[in-house]
Amino acid sequence: MSFRPEGSQEIDPAFKDEDGTFTTVHVNTISYAYNTQLVQPDDVPKSALDFLKAPFQGKLITTDPSEDDAGLMAFRSIIETYGWDYMDKYMDQKPSFVTSGHASVSNAVAAGEKLATFDSHLDDAAIEA
Image 1: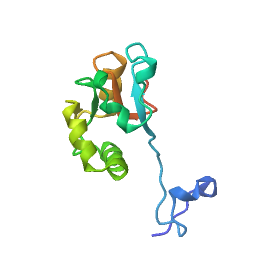
Image 2 (image 1 turned 135 degrees about the horizontal axis):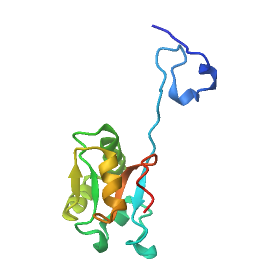
Image 3 (image 1 turned 30 degrees about the vertical axis):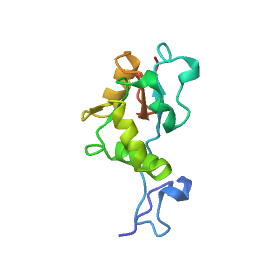
């Protein structure tokens, strides 16, 4: 059923159907995050390939892509860009997977328990490390 809420003309067209049958109400931005106290400037991840560097061995964390749709989309995007071979190399890094959501990921990075992630929500308050 078509529905256009008040103010719908202000919503970016990328987030709604022209006929009003679908409107996105929340957009989550997924980004890289790292602990600024523990990751050296030369090791700051600038692409997914950087997470394969030796300093990140055993120190990566992400949401479980079978439990979290945003995490799944992050993995999908990386695989589309770098291929399935990337996943073998990523798994060799011995990352931790959590099923308790992105806040757990952000908190682990902020606390220094893990060094970095490629699927942090930018609105997670803990990313102040």
